[in-house]
Image 1: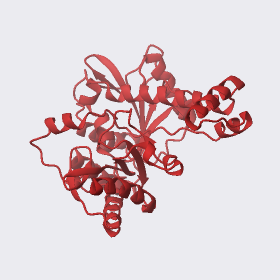
Image 2: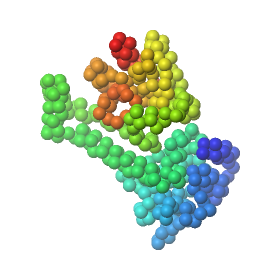
Image 3: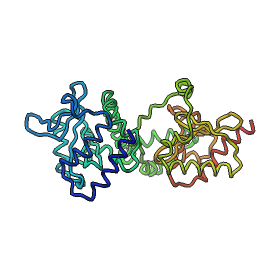
Image 4: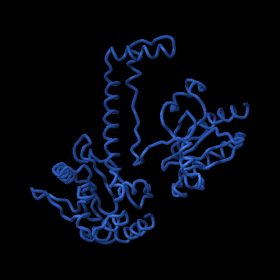
Length: 358
């Protein structure tokens, strides 16, 4: 799949200097792109061009799986910026009329995925945008494959994002406009932790500072236990490079190399054991830290409990002891590409020393 997409990317660069119309864009770029994902444009039961409704409204392509319409694709010329909100609204309305939730608008270079059930109008319903020439994640491409549509993976993901963003907004609204009853509930919870309360006005001020962050990467965060991973993949040999799409995630891979160099410079001695979903750092065959490579950084699980951290330290990490996750550590931390590593190295060192001194 990747090699086929690379050929299309090479062609895009050549065509950008030409005056390519919509029909040429469809034939040279859009159709080949979806064909690499398993869609058969020669099968009228799978891809229907100019498929319209009773009102005569249509998009360029409608994709079917087992007789059910799953996806609409609107094509534009390569030079089109895809910013016409009137056009976006019109195509999303057509989605609603057809009972199809997913729409892609593309100029052959940029692909914009819309989910009609998201709150808002037109471009507010944008779920994901990607450019094949911009080191697009293989997982994004996989979600658009015919095989994935048979399982409704993109649709189910879209529904989750709709739910999560709605809950996020509801919680943030609750924080921003907290009534006295909610403030008292929070203060009682604070008392259980600290043994004393704060003033209601202080709690109200603190609540207004809260925002929630939800990942919108097109990944399925379905975590399984380490034992299941090992059993399923015991015959496979994983490498460190596998965690970084075989080296394609250059920035994250570089960040990982900086992290292990920083760890060793502080006197931490370890070996690395790559697994399917993370790299385990070991001291005397005991893991003290697990690192998952992401396109935009590193996710780290550290073998510590939240009560082993200072108050200040605990504010910067996530307690995942009661949440399904890869790795064995109960403290989770995310490092963005290019961020400072010094702080997290100190936290990892705490876990390392526990193993060394045990």
